[in-house]
Amino acid sequence: MAIITTKYSLGDLVYLIRWNRRQDWEPCGFCAAEGTITGANRKKKSCPECWGNKGKTTYHEMLWSIASMPDSGHLTIGQYGFTKSRRQEEERYMAEETGVGSGSLYYVSDLWPSLEEAQAECDRRNAELPDA
Image (tube, rainbow, N blue to C red; front, side, top):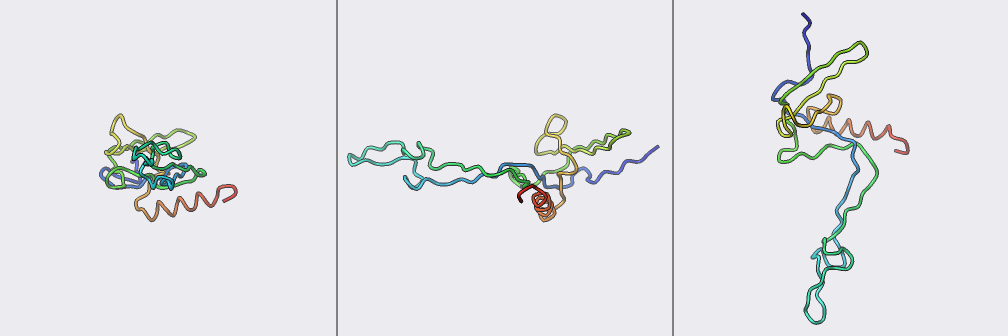
């Protein structure tokens, strides 16, 4: 009988990296991020620059980054699986925070045991991108 060893165990805390489009929130300078402007007659109207949204999101190039997770910022391993064929081995995990059994599936190559290691891997992958 073969013994399968996985990188992470149940209950381990990990950080997920993803291929994302970085986005920044820019508050509206026209209405001072209020979403409304007040006219000379003291009536308020939606800001004509941000349409009442109080600002806008600016989207940037695609990059590897640490995924933002609700609450703690990390994932807790709740289930793992391993598939082996003649051509490949595949280790994957599910997290308690995103659902075990019917939630998101994460691959070992995108999970890291610390924020520092996750950021270092993002930096390494981003440095390999064309025009980086």
